[in-house]
Amino acid sequence: MKVLPIIEDNINGRHLDEVVETLRDGGIVIYPTDTMYAIGCDALNNQAIERICALKAMKSAKTNLSIVCASIADVSDYAKFDNRQFKMLKNHLPGPFTFLLPALSKLPKAFKGRRTVGIRIPDNKIAVAIVEQLGHPILSTSVEGSDEDYRCEPELIAETYAENVDIVIDSGRGHLVPSTVVDCTSGAPEVVRQGAGIFEE
Image: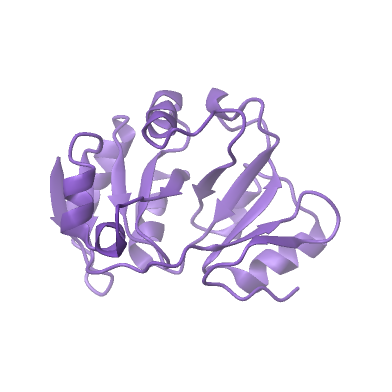
């Protein structure tokens, strides 16, 4: 496992290339978002997704999976939304939100049995740069740790996940509050987890 220092204000292109190549090869990386540090892999690589599901003990058909997109235009390839929901996404993204939307069939086998996909566009230049260079979304789930420092200090996160991930991006101390989750799959949007974002329809 490698720890690569990458900061938002001056993204190291060589390190970014290494992160993206690792994802293309089916690897798992830990990267910063606008909320907590997250574990990510190529969202179109079924084997990598299954590795993350096993790592987080996520029961494949019972747990919502979330992907990070670079733009709302990209979201339309993987999730279904109407004009009203488009305006809602546009008003809140990029930002600390996960929107649950009906999933489209372009997603890989690991999503089969799930009718819903979580959509994230973090307000974080590193996360968006990774997705843009990869050319499609990354699967994303928050890191876990035994206490606050192990959830937000990159060197301690690296210690926790040393045997399970390929790269940890060190972008400084992260945040502890997760994204706000908004369910848009049945009628009016509903906040199902209050996090860092304040949702206003």
